[in-house]
Image (tube, rainbow, N blue to C red; front, side, top):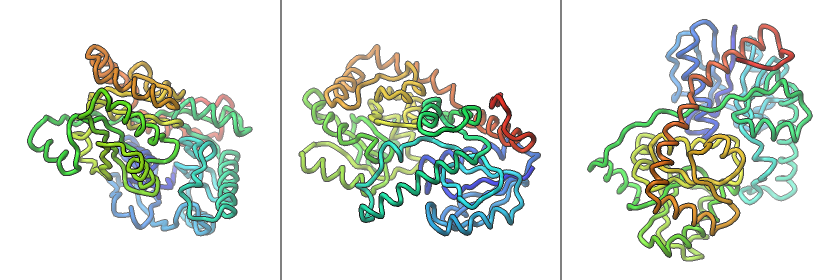
Length: 385
């Protein structure tokens, strides 16, 4: 069997999608010595991926996402590779591609939270592009042999918006890596100092898109400082339009002790996680939510929004709050900071919770999906065990 994976999001360039794609390929290399894989990458991540399995080869597909070049040239390249199946880890399947494929839909954030504020396009062009996105998603869902989702919440969300057979959808949770133990040492302090992080601090890691709800977190932090005046709020994420807007809000509303740490190297993240008093995840919408699990892996108590997906993924291992209420956000964080039995409970529950999420298990299920689709198409029951 010859399988292609659209890995143009591979690695750090693709953020959450990139991590999913990278981990999937890494684990497939470990577990599959039978099938042939062709990994399609862009120029900016082509050297980042080096095959470690002789059955894996990489091919340059230097076409920007969501462009005409992607629609025209990628189908030709895929056809040339003579593939039995292609896995698109995102919804952007070229409309002209007529081969057999599966897709992964992580979420429908685009439908629920259109990011008009971050676009430089005119309103007319922006909404034209938005409608084109919706068409591409619908087309991909309709034509896919299988639709992989990373949570039951996302599966329900897809079914509520698109009339596709439920049997086509398979849920495969993402994984969570085991923690790298970091001691509180001079090296750790050096890492924190390099990013301007002062203890004690609470932590958020991720982007600042509107649905992440960081404006409310910043305002909740201002309320929290009435009881914790020395506390710092550390926001880890690469600077972009949305982080710049958030920084302006923090300055305009005179919210002190907010540290915009910017991009933190992956090798430094364990130290930044482990020294935090708590990890806060105020998102209004998620398809999975990996950072809270990473915090749990580093034995940090998690405070999170009570969004349905968060309750599915985090279970009883987090302290929840209504993410639309700044006072409730502040109160929940304060409970975790001051209630030592609660902190100990959340840390232990978190250690148990992360055992459910394993990248290799995800890859094994995904491989079975590939084989089922190629050998017999979509089975009537739609189950992959």
